[in-house]
Length: 322
Image (cartoon, rainbow, N blue to C red; front, side):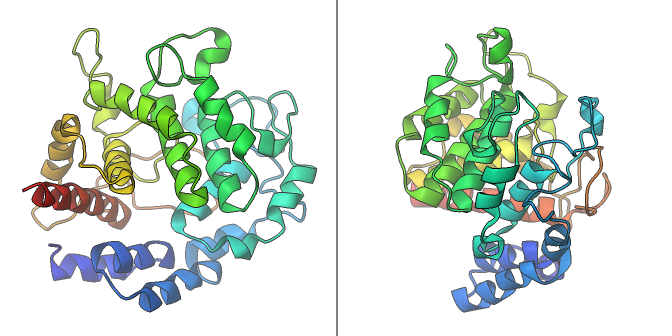
């Protein structure tokens, strides 16, 4: 149960968050949360991002980077204004894809990847970029079956993915793998296509075998980012992102959440403050169209919602199992 003060605080938010609180935490009738969801296109953060779309269907004139960017920036200066990042935000917020009618066609005609000038909806070589593109294309009604088939073909020997495969890497990355499985799950939910489910399960097994935080070879924690509780998710693997995914995937698959995730789940639970809120744990640098959330160390409505929803899924499954 969520304290009424916390739910009132969560409801006093942008439509991108408020409709999800109504649906997923409060169980409001569909007509209630759908009315709120429809506001995304006309007010707040969703309307702000839509206002920056270029006439050719892109944002900031580029596929993954703004058009004026001539070289890849340092990781902590990654801009989030170009097409792929913007579409990902709008999709994850729940914008009705009908609002972007015609965008998929425009991107097919006008957008090319910065890598080798490849066509936008064909994807490129980066696992994380392709995962976002797969989900975004399915959301906009594009046939993404060819890109979906790319993922099973690029699983590396230990069961996951690594964006550095093109440089010869044969070991999976936590970061690449969490993004791949999230994209594959979104694709399956949007299209009903289960042809990539086995590949998704392979990546999830890679992460769960490592309990979402440890090296299989040494038992050491993979890195400080494994404990991060942060939103927006961006590219890195984080604690919240992982627990959110494994609980969502289990619910979609109709299976109990894997007990190997329990340590990560309890770490997330322990981070809840006495007031029922979670703090923002990090800020990813780089240019954005809007201010996505509060600074690190402050109570975050987005983080609180995502953490509470994940715990609700986990706890409901535990109760159902007896």
